[in-house]
Structure formats: structure tokens, C-alpha cells
Length: 459
Image (cartoon, rainbow, N blue to C red; front, top):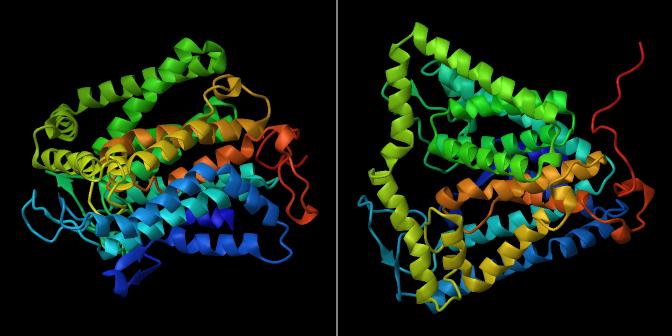
């Protein structure tokens, strides 16, 4: 059920069902699958009751953030109604800077459902990863998700305009702005996601996890190749979100290699340098044989990076992000509630929607997940369960970098919850171990998992 829920997150442009009473708001498949996972955990006799309690306590800061956010989603727009002008989550006017008086809308309810889903997904991910096969399920599902995500993205570009586009369109049935964008003759990747930005954002999250697993020796032959191909796919996606995320992660990677050289073997750094050199040679030869590609690649890269600074999209996003700051001051630091306005930055959305309390709770939760005071966060560990947990922790932290400039809401999202809950579960100290029924035995902190994959059979 955990793997099923993880793979359901792949369908970011889909809707399991829609709620006409809430303006046709879409409930994504991952939220629908989460319901079955929660039922599996709460079934009488499942032996998972203690794990759920542990998960709620371990994710207490996120639970507090979600509860406060849901409370403000209903209270905030009523307390501060008509006191501030905002851009709603679903703008109806054609003018890019059009604003309306603050008031309660159906999007406050939708945002509350998403925030509760994020909270429940973190608790469920914690409980699943406390199971002895949780780390294995997370890594295996990650490999499958990356392969499927790349397949949908690349095939959508290669077979653009054919019947395959209709097949991909079948999965894009959510009530979102489904965009098929082009840059001249270049088709941008979106796979089964609503737009290239969300395609790149989702792919970047799982690229992070695969790269961190390779970095920490968790099935490196598989995760290394998957991370490499996913990184190349993101580079070819023509998405500014992908370029921002890759540049940010490369910076984090180099800083760790410089300041914590014992965190990774020199052999891996040499392999990484060889791969980078080989890619540079291949790209150079390609441009040499086809000079016209240089102009096309330069135009695409410029338009998606420095060329965006003065564009209408950049100005609109900056205007949206500034709303969070205005809402923070207008509400005296309390917040006006998630779903009350559209943002384009997670920090701005958090302080504007949940105020100082919500920002403090979420910030402390991120610190709790990453555990920067532990040596295992930077150095190599032999326990594969712990290594997988560290990889999940870095994934949860680093994925917030692109979210800080693209997220429209204060909800950190289901992907963040998956890795945050997994990190807390897999990195538990031995003194917190608890006795549970054999039917749902958690992973013991003392157990050394040599690999999250089954051992090959003897010939």
C-alpha cells in the first residue's frame, strides 16, 4: 500500500475525482491512495496502532502546522475580510495584476484538505518506513517512479502531435491549467503533469533522492544510473524550475564535498568527474556536427533563465510573492489562512497564510528532519536503513529550494511529507524503539540492512 501510494503521486495532472460543491476542485490520486494506506494502518489487528501514535508524535511540529493552517483557513478570511486586496487562488479577471477583496472562498476548504493530506501522508510514511521493508519499498518505488516519469516526459516530446499525445492527455484530467507549451519549434516536457514547471518540480524531487542514495551507497549501481538519466532529462526539459533546482543541488553537493570530504569516497567523485567530462565532450561534438543546434539551445536556455527576469510571467510571480508579505503585516503576524491568496514562493505563502506561528513550526520541523547536528547527516554510515533515511532527509530539505520561488500555496506538499516522514522513521535512535506485534514489526535501529534489494539467487 505504501508503494501504491508513492506511485500514485506520479499522476500530478490527474484527478481521482472532483468536488463540484467546491468549484470542481480536483482531488489528486495520491490523496485518494492515501485513504487506503490509512485504512491499512488503522485496520483492527494490523498491529500498526502504535506506529501511528509514534508517527503523530514524531511529526508533531508538522501536525501543529497543519492544524493551525486549517484553523486559519476558516477563521482568517472572516476576521480580516475586506481589509486587504488579494489575488485569489483562481483568478477570474484577465488583467495580470487584478486583485479582489479578501473573503472566504471554496479554495480555503481545498487548501485545508491538502494540508491535512500532507500531515496524514507524513504520519503514514513514518509508519510504513518503520516496517522492516519500508526502506526497500521507498527505494524500489523511487526507481520505478523515475523510469515512468522519464518515459512519459520523453515520449511526450518525441511523439508530440500524434495519437500518443491523446493517451497522455487521458491522464491529465485534473481541473488545472493543462498547458502544452512550445518555444518556437521546441516542444517542452510535461508528461502527464499539467505544465513543464510541475513536471520538472516532481522529477527534481525524485532525482534528489536517487542522487542521495547513490551518494550514500544505497544500491549505487541502480540509483546512480537512474539519477544520471533523470538529471539529463531535467536538463532537457526546458524548465526554469529544473535549472534552478539542479544549480542549487550542485552547490549543496560541492559544499559538502569541500567541507566534509569524508562524506563520500574519492572513487565516486572521480566517477562523477569522468561522467561530467564525457557529457561535455558529447555536447561539444553534437554542437560541432550540427551548428544550428547552438542557436536553438542558446535561445531556449536564455529564455528560461536570464530572459525571464523582465518577462510578464516574472513580474506577475513577483507580485504574487509580495502578497504574502502584505498579508503578514495586515494580519499582525497571524496570517489570513491558506487558500486565501495565490503566491509564488513557499516562505512568502507560509508567513502570509499562517503567520509567525506557522512559519516557526514549519522551520523547526525542517530542522528536525534534517538533523544538522548529527554526524550521520554528513558522513558515511554503514547501516543502509540509516543511509536511506539521511538521503530522504536531504531530499526533503533540498526540494524546498525551488519551492521557495514557485510554490503557489503554504502547503509544503505530499512529496515533502513522504520524505520527511521516512527520514524521521529511518533515523530513529535505539532508545526510542518500541515493542510491536510481529504482524507489523518495525525496522530495528540495530538491524544492519546490507541492501534494500533482494539478494541474487545462487546459480
